[in-house]
Amino acid sequence: MQLEEHTAIAPEQQYRASVYRLLAALLRDIPSEAVLTYARQLADLSEGGDALATALVGLGLAARHTDPLAIDDEFHALFIGMGRGEIVPYGSWYLTGFLMEKPLSLLRQELFALGFERDPSVKEPEDHVAALCEVMAILIETDAEFAQQQHFFSRHIADWQQRFYQDLEQAPSAAFYQAVAQLGSAFIQFEQQYFSIQQ
Image (cartoon, rainbow, N blue to C red; front, side, top):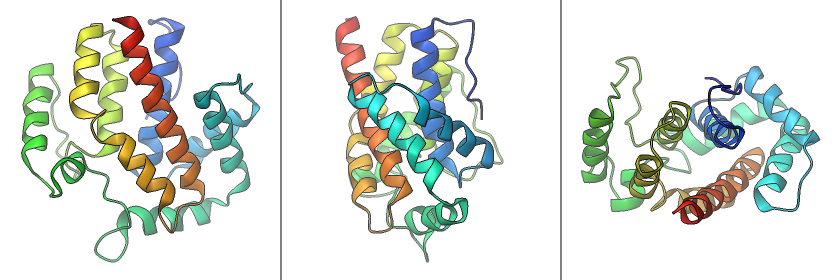
């Protein structure tokens, strides 16, 4: 996981990639101390009046005031559970109601065309919310064309991740992850506006 800035791209693109990387790190697995340390620093940002800045500060405050063991327990309840967690973080589930369906097949074809190769050590399907955030971060960091970024976002993220973050925010076990959900929701809106303005 890389949370640092990438100096080869413009500051606006560094910002976008960093938020995608942060969401991926928080949703892929139990956040490491390095991830939580990074998140805590966000509490010192100026809110700036927009929803995304407010959500970043909110996440920073939540990271400062939540015990890491509590976050560990929360992650297990939300995403692992006894057989299944409270939230199912896969695109196919949100788009079809089932796992491993056509949206995953289409995603795999597109990832192959983009030059992405599946890591054999990764057990999660490619339509996991964190994996998609990581792909977007890589597209931004490698300065992929605007149209390519927009296409991937529209086809594989925009249609379901807003609903995922709404469900996550309302999940019975969500406390720290309410702040994560608020950040994710605000960022999806930010990206939708970003792509519409850039057209």
